[in-house]
Image 1 (cartoon, rainbow, N blue to C red):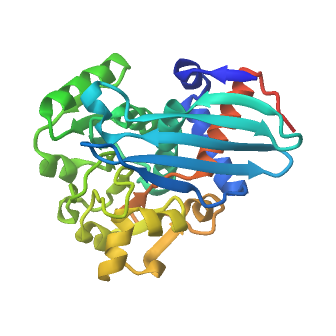
Image 2 (cartoon, rainbow, N blue to C red):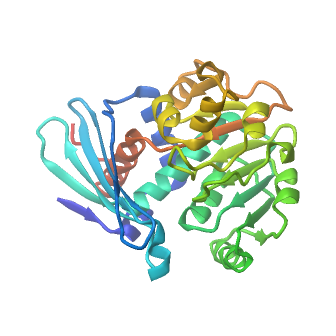
Image 3 (spheres, helix red, strand yellow):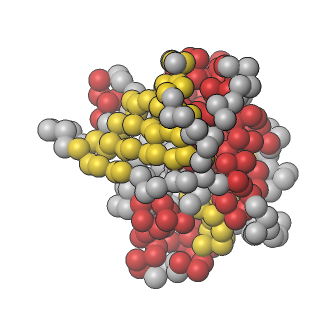
Length: 318
């Protein structure tokens, strides 16, 4: 059985290939049961979350991700996410690979946002603002740079020193990123605003968004958390990765649905509908688009298959 650590997983999942793999999985579909989502008490700290996410392509591949998310791990200088993905043959049940779950999750999440931006952001988008300084920040910067010619890259965090450190890390990876202090000004300039935070209160005000902006919301993974305010939702054409996930788990969608700012029918399309051409995506130069990602098991399956076949030289289990 193949076992991939975080570095091997990263090497096997180049963003151009991963974005296309996620695109194909949304387009072609797979069996994706409701994921198990369990809150775990951590005495004296923020509650942790255990996720169990199964998915399979009948007769081809099957897999499940087991993921532990501990928000206060930064206090111990540890990653927020630990986990693994177990990939099996969908024909025989043979265990094929264990893929490091933290790296897989970070990269497939960024690839999904980049896929959405490929379908929704303006083709001439040149400026990206990254909101958040955690693990996903550099992943999102790298992924969003694949299909848009981004000439100006900026990053904002509540702690400016952390934003500056992340900017230096991004510069070391070949991206000319500038840390910024004024979030309102930075949002107002950006063509793409990508947010990956654990905020429980809105950070992005809809009044700040310029015409034609694309807002990519990745954090705020619980119904009580949100990164955007009601004005952002009401000004934007709203898209999601999966309707069920977004309407039940994402505060950026759940809260506006609850207070009447948003109706279920106002969600223009999910990624399956977008990738299949059932919705045209962006329809005007000045349209503001909002994409909310909560993560889906099919994204993990797409990434695990790509990692396995990349390392095995394209060999399929089917």
